[in-house]
Length: 234
Ligand code: 1GP
Image (tube, rainbow, N blue to C red; front, side, top):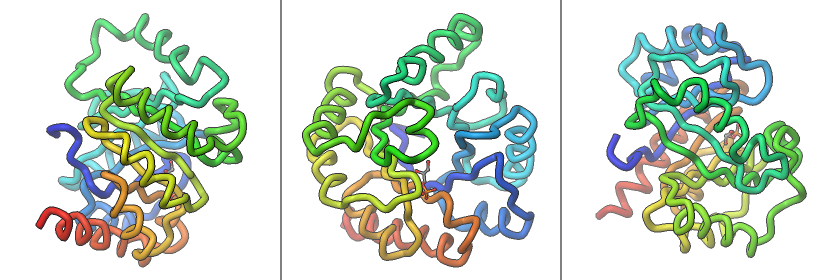
């Protein structure tokens, strides 16, 4: 997809179960794509299983790579996180280096996008894994956004609030510093109002956990995001 022109994405965790009826509703919701990704319990087997089930629909499907072992062909895109505020370098460039030594010769770079992650919730699983040290301040966020845009020229900057709803002001502040790099917001969206609010400031809104405990409200976020984007393009 040109410049990753997604507006709304659902994120499904391969380690969690979802029945066919719910999966059909998600795939046919009008979302711009489904990210397959998680932190714990991601295996090649559960990634392949979810991929095969989503592939029955025409929705684009993206693997957000968290472990080298679970990478498999067949996805439309591969998003590779580099955690800009990690203190464990494995999550900044260590695993990436290891993966490239093994698979670099066969990677299709057209399908791959690096996401500069800024983890805003220090208590989420990804933060624990990457050893994120505290909550980034506004100054930190701006510096990471500038790093993503101007120093690393990353296509995507991901403000990851995973499990908690973030600060619209802070997301807006990051947006002010991003022009070529797209801003992804993810975390704690449970209602269409929250989806709308974040769609006003971020380029791409990711909706995860609510799929598993309140599918009806999860589905409502698609329209909410698309309506905001439509209004803003007029
Ligand atoms: C998680 O940003 C996504 O990686 C979405 O967060 O699960 O809290 O919606 P939630």
